[in-house]
Image (cartoon, rainbow, N blue to C red):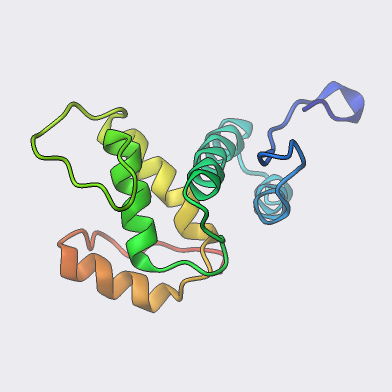
Length: 135
């Protein structure tokens, strides 16, 4: 998307080709904070995948569970839907570092309480360092 003065930035469009409000608010927050344009682009790509996942599986972004987020991770890795379990291993669609970046963008935006997500990460063994966020 071009801005006045020739600057370029990124946004997320929904299936209806309209700007996705919550994603745009988050991306604008990043822009105002002086975040690198490359980071804004990366997070916009992540949120575009997130909104595509929500649309394909009929999920509302503000009524999600941790299981829905787990379904998103499975979808990123294999392309399987949230209720599908693969019988055998398959090659991942994205590198784990890319999946981690995608999840980071979604994590910052999600309305699921942060404490609940931390508990789930600890239970799954994916605790890692505590990450700052805007929510």
